[in-house]
Image (tube, rainbow, N blue to C red; front, side):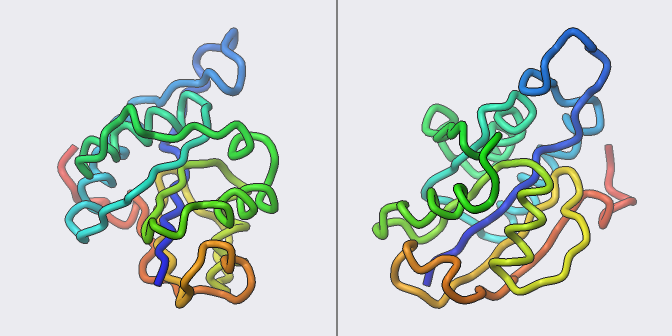
Length: 168
């Protein structure tokens, strides 16, 4: 079995109009949501063996918050340009090339790609993966090369607004 965890970056700031899209930082809510969601996922017993991330600052920063909560070495986050600008087809091709020695990978990216991949890879009909949303998909396969051939099963779909009463 292989497990893929898709994470949309946390809420980003639009305050700095001089920053390019790839350099947008997390806003206050994003900086609160990312550690909360990282801990939530850690409490579920998720242990990624590899974390892929878009190189965009908002995705990288979100990945680092999760890595800290999951005791994953931040310096081992694998930044991939294609997660930022190539689309779901290329991201799935990247997943297909992942070493079969690994059983659980986590991927930090952007919409609409994360929503599109959740729907196609898990056979779901989710309208939108919100910021800092996390979808865990289990595949009854032996090789990452098989991802995309048949739908996996959605284990859980979490996002910050499901927890409106949490302490901030």
